Each structure stands twice: as C-alpha cells, then as structure tokens.
Image (cartoon, rainbow, N blue to C red; front, side, top):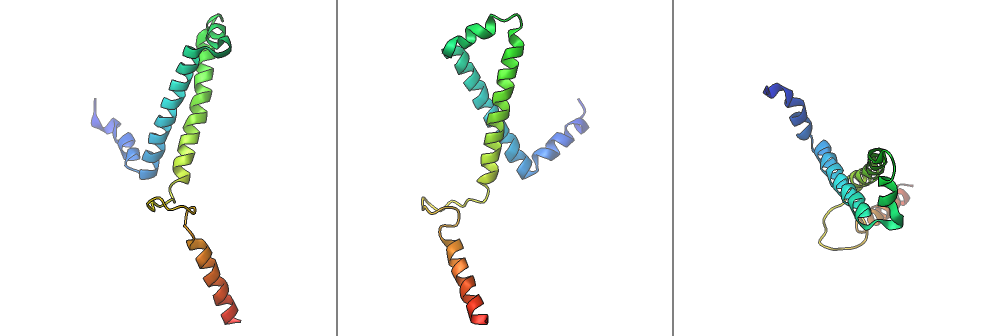
Length: 116
C-alpha cells in the first residue's frame, strides 16, 4: 500500500486538538460499547429478549449502540475540551483560577477609582 494514502490521516493526528478529540471519542466509544454489552448481559426489563425476538435485531442493536456512541463520545470530547484551561495545582480547591480572578477584579476596580 502506498504511503501517500496515509499522509492525510497522519497529518490530522499531528494536530494536538484533533488528537485530543479522537482519543476522547475512542474512550467514549469504548464506554458506550461496554454499557450496551452490560445492558444485554444484565437484561433489565427483558431488553435482550425484546431485541432478539424481533425479525431484525441488528437494526435495534445498531440504533441502541449508535445513540450511546453519540452520547458518550460527545460527553467525553466535551469534558476534554472544557478541561483544557484547568491547571494542575496540587489539590487546591477554588475553581479554575483559585482566586486569581477575584484579585484581578479588585485591582481593576482600584485602578478605575484612582484614575477618576
């Protein structure tokens, strides 16, 4: 297989944001697959029996898996994007900036009052 066919895929994986989204989509897809497998194994409300009693159980399984893939994949990707601005501060609480934003707001208000 020629190497030029894999270049666009490799180029996309070199972009950090795309790589982050692809990894988290894969994590969400694994979670969705495990959840659907668990639902079929546990059979809550006779779900497995209901699906396999149909004349085409593949469609029902595909719809169930696709909906879980969309849900868990987008949730994993969204949480990865939202966690981008968070700094590791060694267990300190207080949100994203740990009080930095409130100090900046106080300094800004103080500067406004001094310039008037």
